[in-house]
Amino acid sequence: MPLVHGTEIFEAARKGHYCVGAFNTNNLEWTRAILGAAQEKNVPVLIQTSMGAAKYMGGYELCKGLIEATVKSMDITVPVIIHLDHGNFEAAKEAIAAGYNSVMFDGHDLPFAENVEKTKEIVKLAHAKGISVEAEVGSIGGEEDGVIGEGELASVEEAKELAATGIDFLAAGIGNIHGQYPANWTGLHFDRLQEIADAVDLPLVLHGGSGIPQDQVKKAISMGISKLNINTECQLAFAKATREYIEAGKDQEGKGYDPRKLLAPGTEAISDTVKEIIGWMGTRPVKLVPEEI
Ligand SMILES: [Zn+2]
Image (cartoon, rainbow, N blue to C red; front, side, top):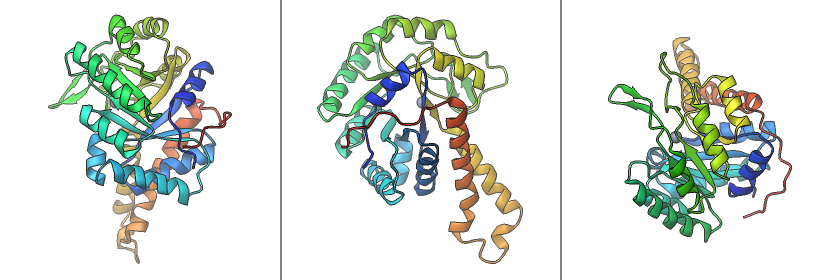
């Protein structure tokens, strides 16, 4: 079973100046598409659930079981990391108990001292089971009540303090945004990314990877980003392909209404999107032999 925790994979990516994709799953189709694409490209992959997706799917144990069983049934041999995306304290604890390989504890909305204390607790719980931990400094922008916020730029001092808790990788707000980017977006703050990369001896994570121009992502990777989070791009690809199928009336031809047929174009679109991103991002084929857990 090629399930691994994230530490070695992301350290290797950092040293090699490349990046590993972290893709959000929502169901069986998403899971199969992401795992199949990584296998085809022969690269490690991080498959993650947000708290909302885990709730939608039926909880962390179900998510872990689904991904694990799919890895097995598809004969996946590339390293796979099952990760919790943006978990609060309770969610991180639940995902650790359910046997995820990696968790993000996102305490950015807590007072900073509390974020640090809670991160320490999660690190202790996670590392006791060989699970890697991501934390967030600053905040990632995004839409709230129809207004797209820029997020809060990560402070270098806070990045250093959070890194000292023993986390394995660090997400930093550098002008990146969740969801679709507005037309007037001013780009990533590379100066701040450089300061953080110089100050913190950890692989860094770029959230909101859907919609950042490729040249900016590549530059960020060269500066120490080792994990790129992609969610919206797969959602848009799935929705577009599914809409085209329906609009072409294919659901009304023969047994085109069969969900296995109706969901196939969307699933293929996710797979194509993941493969395309892995391609231009330059993720390297697996070299290290991961410890089996
Ligand atoms: Zn995020």
